[in-house]
Length: 314
Image 1 (cartoon, one colour):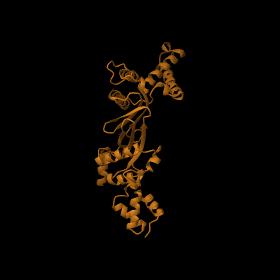
Image 2: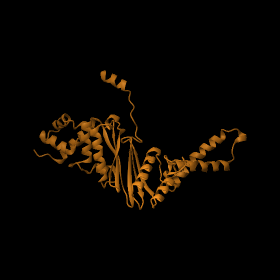
Image 3: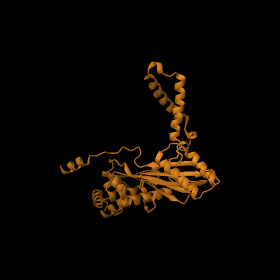
Image 4: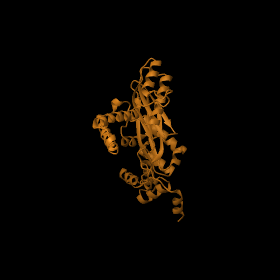
């Protein structure tokens, strides 16, 4: 019996299984939809649908890199942190990272619709469904980003076996071990201190005005709480506001942050890069950085293990 594309699509929507798995199931059951669903369930390929409403906020970030020119970081989420240590899961995420490194996709939807490099008869989305069947819990390819150096190099850093992944792109005429080591240190700085911008020049006026409003409200409240004879005039409050904003910008701008390995405890990241650049006869300029932290911004489900066991016993 000939199996139509419409049948495959219907079964895929019903079960969440891969396209080729759906076709195989329909072929094996002579197009009987109910029997095909049972076929997939028995083979563990219809598990994805049951897990669709679960929270996947654990997992890992991994990086794939090609020489000094290109790197890609991906975040793949799971339900539990145990899965993040699973060798099969980690190997799969490494393959997803390699896929991203060789991808031209700009959105996660485009990426999921690409042919899977390991088996071009499948899509990336199909590979995820297959892995859900293997692992036995909800998984999600949440995001990816590829960085390609145009005049310089890229350096990557993975922290905590995949809890944080960082890629740094730098513009430089010299790419040697000293320069790459310095950029690796900067990547570690980004992992630890989580800057939002490269320099103060990158901060939008809109952001500054928004923060000024918040800082002004804080300063006015603090001033009102002081005894009347110690309250500061408006012009002094405004000067304090500028100082507070500048301090805040130094905390969120990479170049202005105190370099975590500074021997004097005062050297900024910008000064550190200038020092390394001078020693190597070049200027080192950070063009871009990407920082992924596993589960960042996701709601995590907190469960009481004892209660869960008791519920299962009942």
